[in-house]
Length: 637
Image 1: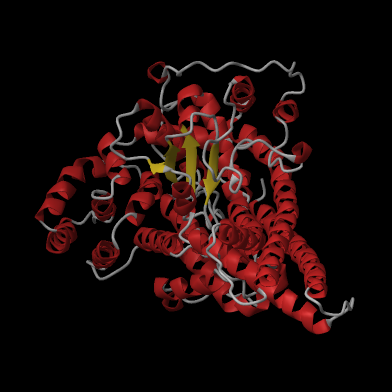
Image 2: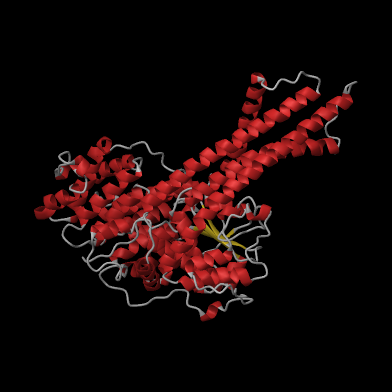
């Protein structure tokens, strides 16, 4: 999967959606205009086919209602995926859960998050839904959630659950989530017209609208006609809006299925889940009244499709299965009442972890092409390495990363300096700002923290982000302030400290106010200085002075459009503060600029044939600052 190509496709689909939505609204306007002509003629006016004033009024009113309705629905989901999950009765999985099904689910999602380089999504369960289904929702990768039904937990094996979660991660990486929210808002905006008409009719029927005077009968008839016209027009528009919604949704499901098989290297997991849906009495049908409104979010068809399947948001099960397994004989599987989770491992560690790095099988000789190709993708090797990483981490640190109370203390621990004097100063800062209990807990973590391999720290940050986002605003502000003081305790900022702080603050900002960065820069020439600084900092960080210039030249050669405009900056101009500002500006650049920059950056850090831990961390921090998910990279030094 090409992350940048996927994002371009998502942007193209959004443009298509806007065009189709405009057509649907235009059709609604003309239908409303026709109804208005009939109503005015019935009221005694002269029938004139073209009345510009009336048409303008209808068009303005229709557009205003649709826009306000869409904005209202968008505002409901603006806090991210958690709002979507909670709207259908989702419950966030507690990090303290002792339920084996829930622990298995958390483990699978954590593996996928680490392997893909994404922020760990929030995990939700729809307790009141016995059917087999799931969805991913959010406006950005930083506020995404993954939700599964109770039936999914109880009736799928681990391999099948992994296939379903891989499918949902594909939607996250492909940029489908934000499009889903736009689809929901668009369709609801059109539906509001019909709802307004229905309310008018209901009010008349219940006697809530009272009209007096001699013309009472005529006015009641007129009001009734208006209400009926609005309802019919609104529902006609809603019908076509739902057709658009279903068509846009169906075309993405085959890609997500194929991506899941690619991620897990296990087609039986994906086909097994689909076969169990087909063989289960309840299938994937949801009980929630919002199943129709949000059906395009889900893994499988969540409601009974009307109009001969025209409203179906997903292809038929047998077509999806045959796309993966052409030999499928049409036989579905009746799932067990409850899968025996105790007999299944939560993770599947294969070989022992390599002491040199955190991705022992992903990269024996690191190449820049590997680093770029890994962006926004999941590979079987990356999933296996994530499983091994989680299996090798201290249970105490894993538990701390998942809990709101202890996640900040874990992050403090990741910043503890190897110098005893600086470490003591940092521990005193924690006691001062977070209290003696926090300092005691930090001390308890110290032995396990000392055993961490260089590549373990960033994945722990990924796992801790959902818990950190649950902190109240005041506590989060205090945490960020304390973290900054720990970073500057020795009067300097290391590459790791910069990388951790940059990734943390970037994801917290996006998760707190989930909006996609508006693209403002489309020209390489507009960011020459920023690109030059990024490559210079990487060259001076990743290599000895003897090969710094050569490494910079290797990276700059990847940017032929800027040939002759890039030059290695002196050390005093390569500070991390300047890099921070440059990355903030580059975050507003277009996808092609980000792709070429990250390609050049990867060539810089791997110019000597090795990628050390600090180099990998800085490269991943740069990618995170650009809102690009980069998985852990193999290390050879």
